[in-house]
Image (tube, rainbow, N blue to C red):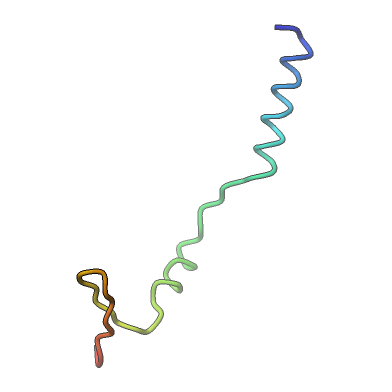
Length: 53
């Protein structure tokens, strides 16, 4: 390969790395989203709410 081809490949990979960073969510954010105050149960493709849980 030519030098310019290698440079272009490295730059394009760097551009993709900068454009789409994948960040792991913070543990506190996940805990807040999971505790939404409603208890549910699922069976057979249906979801039912559990009262007084």
